[in-house]
Length: 112
Ligand code: 5GP
Ligand code: ZN
Image (cartoon, rainbow, N blue to C red):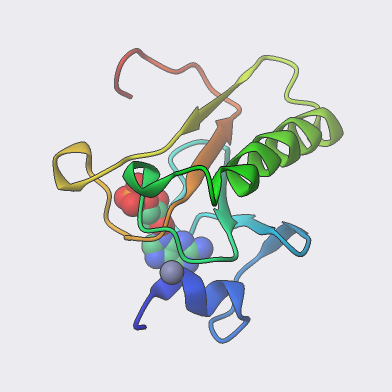
């Protein structure tokens, strides 16, 4: 499958790794939208949040545990935002499930 994030997960395309285990990989976004902008992906291919189901949701729960761990370790004292864009109208440009973990500035709501 020609999937950018599968290739990053496999180490075929380099990334700036923040955290890695058997289930997920966290790496810096190439085009950061905040002083801290990390992407956390499952190593298995899940196309988007719309594809989360009973079989694969443990990886998603694990990703949120990892996000909390990264936030604690990096000291996101002022808070952080976790976003997953799902589908074209929501602006999902890479069709492999990923969670944007952002911190270091004020965030608007619902966008920005
Ligand atoms: P989406 O637009 O699907 O919500 O998020 C995709 C994210 O992946 C974007 O924030 C984009 O900057 C990031 N991205 C796209 N290609 C690469 C890449 O090759 N390396 C890294 N580190 N990030 C990428
Ligand atoms: Zn993939």
